[in-house]
Image (tube, rainbow, N blue to C red; front, side, top):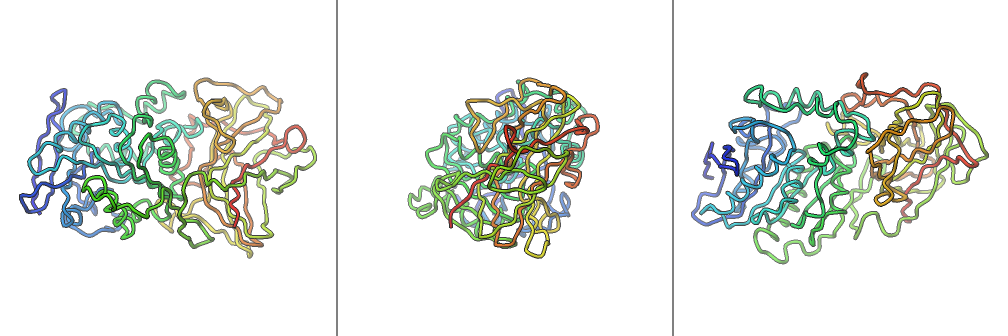
Length: 502
């Protein structure tokens, strides 16, 4: 392997982006896998994130990026770039701004014309790297031939910044731990401050949201059922709305890191890149458009599908009653908020797809934050948790959703029965004491209940049980004191669920 370190790439405004190039030790031109982030191209994995073991061995491993040794052995060059204003690159950092994507565009185009390059370039990586892949694909650089978007996001407001309109303050610890150490000085934008000062979806968010109609290159989009804090919704919506002729969706389980480096995943990535960078027209033959890890209790069963949501889905309503969920609408009633509702399966019941909670509430205040969590319990009452971003040691709910009541306005053109789409463009206070419908988007899930197992719906006033992923900023939160959930009759609160026939 040949290594060229600290190569300077000029951008359109003459700001220097600094990269490392790893390539096979031959004179033969090869396709290129590129990535760019503010995480530090020179920071060896164990020094950056010791909480995750080095899952793919190598002296040149960097957090969330392809392993250069593995890929150069298979005939690819790997390029890693420091985002502007971080590491060794010049300029001012303003994360996910247009300038970020334009810089990556310029790096890709530089890679495409080097003598060691075939002119075919792909973006690949986890999280940030996936997000930048979506963004740069929308700019359509001529040498970009494919994108591997592994656990990223596409809608900066809904997926990350203000989930359900509520400030995602996990950004604070991420910013302190992962971004600030890589900055070259004090001249940079502060994403936490920007998020705090922009409650509604304005031009600042629109600049950072992918125009999926402009994404036309082949895409391999991978989501994780357990990444319910950031990295699931965007990969599903990205796959749905990308204009690409060739696109695949995979939803797996596991930690935030391990699946990308697993043998099955590297084999799939290699087939995908061989098809669109290597010119092997048959490399993706037999790979279905959608591949899902169907959760069966603590286990999974891989299943191939043709579309999302699954075309054979039977959409049904589970009605909220007094501490229970049922298929039949109850008599008109009410219960204090927050509340928990349980459903016990009498036969196998698979729920795979997006969900929605239609919740009728009244409140003495003019606003409240609603946190929705789905949990599964076995026949002995033991919780069956989902694997969280940190692996099995960080369990999370099987499904999750959020909504600030004053953000309940829907976009009628984007809203579907199974996926409410909130416009987040104006504040609509609650009228105290008046029953009001809140349509809460619940991110996609896969839950299989066996007979005697229980599904629990938690409608909560906070999500403090989520630890670092909680929305617990005291300056942003809207309390739920004096709230009531309405049941049955004209205010039949219900959970809209995707039932998959055996």
